[in-house]
Length: 233
Image 1 (tube, rainbow, N blue to C red):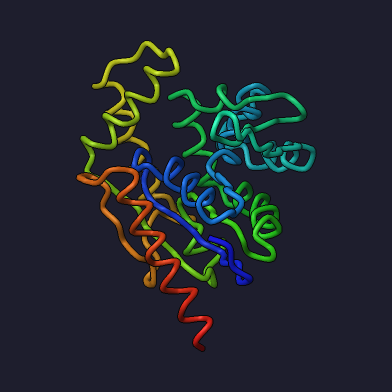
Image 2 (image 1 turned 60 degrees about the horizontal axis):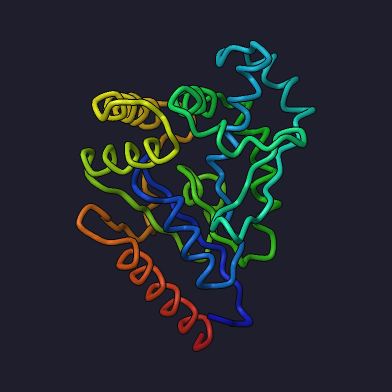
């Protein structure tokens, strides 16, 4: 969908709602960059675990953040973006249940959110990007051109996450995945800093009974409407 106007789009929502796949597909259809901000926090969590830094150790996290190098590298053949930490590919290492829980705890620390805020805003400069996360439309880009809040019921999200983990070779039961998801939901909703919530002007989409294509189609329709409004204005 070529256009001279490049929008800055945010997609927020809870774990397992399909944000990563949907945002990647939407970005590809628009010819935009896809930025998985959750991967930033996961990479920080992995680095902290490897260095023995606790989630509550703000001073240690601050020192670590000052020298971390996190980068995204497009991998079109794989249909995703690969993540490197200090030059090492950690795309798979940051997707384990352990890192998921740790990243949720670490992302609640103000020092971590402040440390990554500038990087995220720099990545969004000039538009033409789809950012996914949990506070993209509320904290990082409150002025975004278009905001979505993608959700699904708890069982559907757990099944999707279970399938993803099993596909990656993880030996884990569905009940464990559901319990991890419930804990993460509580952490994300109850944290004092940037709790998970929909922006007031976000378009809410419940993906429980929808296919990926139906979700993307709904988002593309909203993008077209927004672009038409900008042109006519």
